Image (cartoon, rainbow, N blue to C red):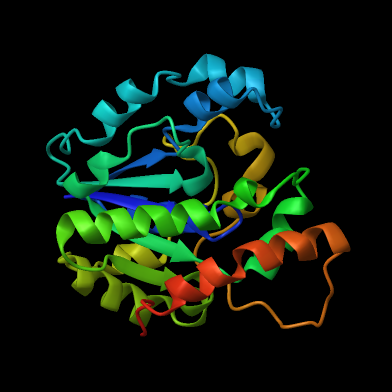
Length: 241
């Protein structure tokens, strides 16, 4: 099985990669389109030059990597994808060849977390619209809606929600998915030095965030208003533990 997990940034995506990567039957891929995205856009991201140098910058070559079956003895490949990396010029037709899962999180929380790490310029930086486009394409190609899971639900009850998620995609749940060792992993992208400090110090899913009222600054509120309908659309399909 090849699982493509489609997420925006700051959305539990790395912890989910840890969860699946902890399975003895699974190998993991970390944001394989990142270098191609940076090369094509010219955007200045943290560690831009190192990412481009270390990664594959030809998107067609990345697609071929993504549709390769697992290498035995592994029987499962888990791919962590950022939806905003999938530029209009990149081929996305291959989503019909893999098992797709969509990971969502409330836009307000995404914006607050992401803006603390790097500058946000537009709604495209957090990928909500592209996530919905990918969801619609996968649904059309495979004749049914893919699995959608909310990061908050996973943190509230990891075992229960992951069991339901595995069942939905036809995968046997493993207790291995609930715990991992601290530190770097071989699959971590070179950008992990900037982004993964919390995950490197974790051994499992963190409990739900304590809800504290907060307001976004005006420029982030404007972005939230652009993407909230896409988030609510995806919520309709969210699995429940």
